[in-house]
Length: 262
Image (cartoon, rainbow, N blue to C red; front, side, top):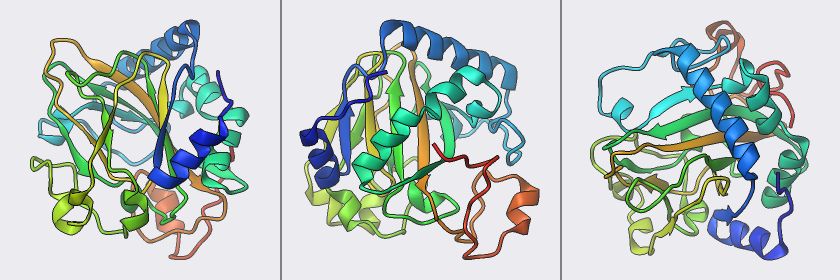
């Protein structure tokens, strides 16, 4: 793993809310992680959350035709866990966000299948069970991500404009810009990637992806992280039901089994 960030990358991330990091994984590491992810997907069937989380099943709807989504693979696969909970990756996350500690929120593979639907513009953090201006995700390309098959796009600086209002990933690509019309005035940036490249984006940075217009899939592995000390906002996301019901608004999310420190 290439876990060294150059100062201009950190500055660009803090200014724009996202940054690309080329050559994060070697060819052998891509092959190892990809095989582990595909094994998890095969084991899970239509179940979307692994390891005892919220019971969610893949359905025949628009959202589930945007990508094949399976979450919390780190809880059932030691190889995925080794990558997503790598302490040097944790150091990168803290360096980018300028804070002292991160916990895993959840990982997820996002496989845009052949001719998969576009991913509408959205924010991540408002969907989660905590609010933070310092949440962050890594997005690792395990296969080539191109303009044709649905690479990531970002709205630079949108993390500075965003509140916690959001829209779902639905059929109207531009619904987010009805909530944040000021974001629609900013030129968007595409980030095509080779296998092993990655990007980091803030949980309040607007992003999306086009449709997969090809007959081959686009496969990525991602993980979201929350700052140590984050508190429960009352929302369910993928927490186990028993844990969710035990929480009160304002409780610190410090469950080392479910959200370990990286």
